[in-house]
Every structure is written in C-alpha cells, then in structure tokens.
Picture 1 (cartoon, rainbow, N blue to C red):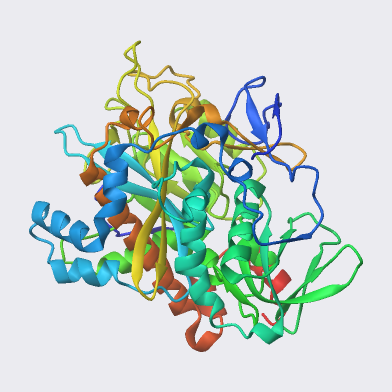
Picture 2: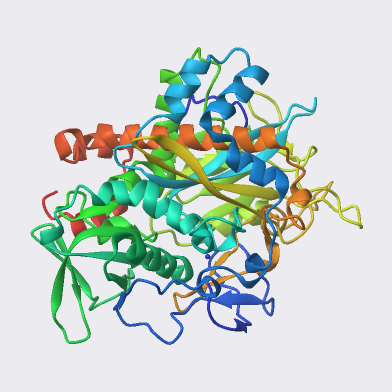
Length: 529
C-alpha cells in the first residue's frame, strides 16, 4: 500500500443503430436503469475488416444527430481561438506566482509516446468557496469527437471537425516516420466504431490512400490481425495478409495483451502510454506525484483527489474509515465507467468486497460529494459545484472531458464535452443510499454480451443550449486545459522512464505496479518478458 504525496490540492461511446432497451449489467455499479433509452454500437451492417477510401467521410455517420444541428457556444468558441500565447498571458495574469516562461515550456512540450489524450475533470469547491478544476483520470485514445459541435462554418474541412485535427496535428507527424514501402495504413478499434470509422475516413483523405478499418476485441479467438517480426498484419476477406506501416489505435480494453510494447509498425498511441497511466490509474497517480515533485515551487501542480495506491482488499475498510467512511474504490486498469465504486455506507462496501475481482490491487481515493458528505482529507472537504439548479432546484454532478493533442509544436485543445449523473445530488444521504446514480457520470454501458451502449440523454454539449448548465467560464476552461496538459506530460515522462533506449524496463514497472494478473496480460503480447 503506497500513499501518494501529490498535492491532494483537491481530493480531488455508439452509435449508428436504433435505440434499444437493455438490461443493466449486474457486476458493477448501476449506470442506466433497465428500459432507459440508449444507443448501441454497430458497424452499420459491416462488421468485416475493410478498406476505407478517400471521400467517404459523412457527418451523419460520425456525429450524434443532435450535434449536427448544434451551434457552438460563443464562450467555448472563444476559448478554442485563444491559442497558447493568450492562454499563458491570461493564466499568469490571474496567477502571478506562475512565470510565463514556465507555463510556455509546459504548453510547448513535445510528447514522445503520448500524443493524443483526454482528461476527465470535476469542478469542485471548498466550504469557503475556493473553486478549482481537478483531474479524475486521463485516457489514452479518448472519445469525444462525435459529441463536439463544429467550431467553424467556413473552414474548408469544417465537416470533419476535430477528427481532422487529431490526424493532421498528431498522427500525420508520426506517419512521417514510417517507410511508405513497408505497408499500408490502419485504424484498429475495440469499441466506439462511430469515431474509429471517422478517423479512418479522415486519414484516407489526409494520406490520400485507402485505410484499413479493423476491430480487435479481447475475446476474439481468430482476429483479422496479427504481429510478425513486430509488424502488424491485417487479413482481408480473401484471407490474404497485408503489412501495416502505421496504425491509429483506438484500442481501449486491456490493449497491452494484443499490442507489443516495441513495434516496427508506427502506432499512435504507443502501448507504453497506456501502461504508464493512459489506461492504468495506478501508474497515472505515480506519474502525477513525480511530475508535481519536479515542478514544485512553480505555482503549478496536477490537482487530484487524495489517492492511496496498491491497496489490497483487506486494507480497504480501514483506509475508508480514515476518510470518514466515504471514498471511491477503483480497479486500476478499467475504463469507460467500469470498475469504479462510490462507497458511502456499509452496504456499498459489502457489495464491493463480495465481488470477484480479476486484479490483486486497488486504488482508494477521497470522495467528492456534497458539502455534508464528502471525504475528510488532509486539506479538508471538497465538494461538487455541479450544474446550475434546474426548475426543480436540483443540482447534478457533472464532469468535463478535455481532449488534447501534442506534437513538435506543443499542445492544442481539440474538443470538449460534459456529462452529468442520472440523479440529482442529495443534500443528506440515507443510510442505504446507492450513490453511483448521483455521482457516476460515465455514459458508456457494458452489456452482458460484451457489447457497449451509450446513454446520450446525460451528454452535455458545448452548444448554446447545453453549455450554460455547467456554470463554467472561460477561465475554468483554461484551467481544465492546463491541468490536462500537465497530466499528459506526467504520463509521457513516466512512459519515457519505462522505455529507456526503446526497451521496456520490466523490473522498474513491476516495482512501481506490483500486480501479477497485469503482468500476465502484458506477457501475452510480449513473450520476451
């Protein structure tokens, strides 16, 4: 069990088909009740690996219908037009302890392994009214494009929105490192086909060549993909194999058991970015801690909930009691809302402890709730600002997803969306309250058959209709952007430490993240360990 010293400054996806009713999974906290309308993922009658050609991008295939008709909120549009120089000027004006040259070096950082990321942030406050944005988690290969209204009505490639920005500013730079003679291009995914196919269509336009689109799931027994001599190959319907020189990876579920750490095929993001924190909450917490130590004294730091790492099941009750009986338990390697448990009473704790868990170690974090029932931490209590009260005077927990890309020219924001919880935030808790419905914001729902659905009714767009619900100003968006960039840099620096001279430091990783089940998964795609 490791306690982190990173400033607990704050304790701290689909898509094409018709709506369906689903049964709620019974193995994790409630996300959407039976019968609630959701959208189910499909490949629109095309589940086979296939080539995507130039000119195939169609907006209605890659954006939610309500996004197509949405108008970007002027404040959000203003944020996206600021540019890093004006962001630096504004932030250092409001935070004079931060030197402009320090912030400039951060926003101009060129990532080695982690070029495309998205952080989820909460807007929180203290009893004295001090508001801040805090990082809940940072994801490699994040969703978000299908939920972002278009920023411009005049740009030549306007209809492709943020898809084109990710491909042009991040992946195209990586693509330049690949030898065109060594094979084709591919987009590989295991969920969110709406966005994955959008990236494939835009990549075909930018690269001016056909692009393979293939799915590779954890449960696939005979996938259309394989690795030979560290080169990715894709199988067509005639059973012929084609080498791939560069791969845009939208693989989110245990990607390290299918993609090797060291490849000749250019991969974005490289798998090490997931292990170093992009899909590994345990290592992300360590990365934040190390980075905060390095930038101590600059007036900057990654703000997170108070976090305790490498916790065994038996240690959980005692640790929760030190936080006033309220906390959040996380399976370190899950994502899309799975493996996160809010604990405020014995019933919720017993439910967690009685489940079978695949991994050996867990994360315990302070819980951000309402003023009267948040975790007690070393720096006091912090609670959700939440949405603007509705006509019933109800406030909902909400979060913000900030997607960014990094290249040789530094970072830039790409898209933003918000999400809210299903039930309003309670002022007082009942003794047997099931708090996930009022604290959980994730829209993804995993079905018993392994498929995914999305509850879009709780999606908050950055448009004229939805954005005002969040009660955010432009300085909040700037704060969220800077927090996201620092989190991505921290994880990228951790990835560099774990891959000295291009080789995975197995011993260092195991010492930082001792988990036998995870090690076995990594070895599935890396037999040399």
